[in-house]
Length: 423
Image: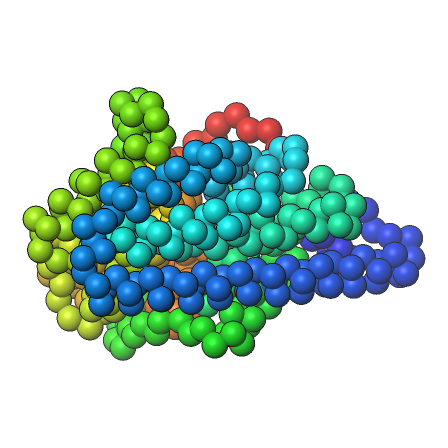
């Protein structure tokens, strides 16, 4: 009982049972509420993106309007959302150093911006949007319940967990992601109970709304031998270096657009022109949007060996120029197609390597190897866990402290190196 309460941020054991039970019930109720809110908002997002994707695929002329969509999104944020432009980095900064409640407009603005991006054909994901919506909504509880900053941190962490779990159908990974993503090299336990409950409830609520998650199959998993460990390490190195490339390019392209184009709404307009031209040059739409069909194909058939590079280019250009959306699903795409490609030279089944890449690139780019391992277990099965765990940890180590979230603090980087850190 007392261990649970310490996980809620309590530094000492209560003198009697009454405050302990009250505290546990309080956080249970709050966490269930967070799960309901994040699960519902994520379900709305998933439904909207399904509609946007279907409409775009049925009306290919919309791709020609991608620059206009980018300009519209840029104008909306420039005139209505300057305070929430930082997105996920704003959330991480507030958790590290709480200052003020997340502006309410973050939720509707990122929702509209992401739907616009998917409708017109930008290469973006959904996790970042779900997290921003969920945390912006649940942060209202701070003033409603008159919570202190320490409790507000936990509510925001639980909001991240609930949203992540709801979008991907991975409650255990969602719990860990909300605790692990804050600081590179440090795992926070102070919100583990609320994050767990919020993640489980968020996932169940999304399913209750009738939304279903993609099923991936890894039919053959050979016994893990010394040779298998070595192959997994080699694959992890490839995933880590690719994750570092993705994060570095994302930051560099974003910095370049900001340096060269002073008027923010023009950045996604120019980026939209470049992406629209690239779509015509490649003659395919497989590199835009979420790319779920290609991810599924990576588990079933041989895909083009350059698919992962094309997705990196399309996604870093889309996000770097200012389109709204997440990075995680594109990272899944990049990892699955890279794993599929290297199955031609590494003696492991292609579906297994696709699954390892699916989570390995994610782990390296977000600095969350534990969450990545749990995603593999929840989506592909327990038998994949050891291979995926090796790939995630090695990828995390090889990617170093370069990640897609600039607001992550750094307690440790690379192979055990430590940097200055204060919590």
